[in-house]
Amino acid sequence: MASGTLTIDLDAIAANWRGLDRMSGPGVQTAAVVKADAYGLGVTRVARALAGAGARRFFVALAEEGAAVRQALGPGPQIAVLSGHMAGDTEMIQDLDLTPMLNSLEQITRHLESLPGHPFGVQLDTGMNRLGVEMVEWQAVAPILIEAGPELLMSHLACADEPDHPQNAAQLKVFHDMTDGTGLPRSLAATGGILLGPQYHFDLTRPGIGLYGGLPHGGAIPAVTLSLPVIQTREVARGEAVGYGCTWVAERPSVIATVAGGYADGLLRSLSGKAQLWDGDTPCPLVGRVSMDLITVDITDLPEVPRALDILGPHQGVDALASMAGSIGYEILTALGPRYTRRYQERPA
Image (cartoon, one colour):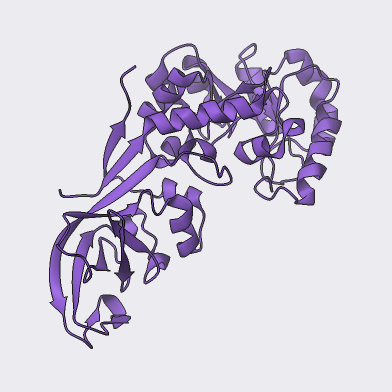
């Protein structure tokens, strides 16, 4: 085993989509966000599993990501591009039947002039100040754009993972102010917005992190396990140090396993001295610093040397690992490197 093994449970991802679809309620379509290579888990297999579960609309960040989804799924499903219609993307948008979510007056002009009649949506800025057409601009162009028939009017909540944050209600009001009376399909809620309740659901929801087992969807089924092979073990005497900087010193005679995996593989350096790896149900502390390709683990209390140890699994999910690193589950998932062998679990249809 030369590299770690990242096991991806496609059935769990499909079940999470179905659960969020039920939460979205009757009459609301549930899309799936598969940007960043399906949050690092492999967009081809993940998109096909989600399509099999019933998803017919997919969201990506870039047109190039849309191309990968179209190749995986073929014609039919709608693929929306959140970065909109960027310069140089016109042929790809046309040839692959992608639906750009237009974010600015510049993009609106580019799209209507270069691809008249081609489907598009509009992203509105309701207070996040990141992407989207602002209120004054929208008031100026809405009559023209509404006549052109956007597929969707959407916006993005800044604080949906904090249910009591006043920004949620503030953005909801602005979204109503900008879109009421247009008669067009609307979308405001990603995973966190779905959990805020029906008033945020509108016509379409677009869960992302909740599909992959991450917070804020506490009821999500974990979708990944990451096992790292033990390369070598050594006995370390009391008082000896391990790893760069000699930051960990043995307080007893210890057995240290050197394990394949490091910050080049998405195991953040800030996990040094904090995370645990697991041999079945037994935790083993990560000692010393996380280096580029290797970590060191204290396995003194194990009855025998394991072939591999789990850093993600039933006892330590992506959000638990992220918390130790001072990060978020999104970063842990999307940082998982290309050196892992990816294995997919899926029951036959």
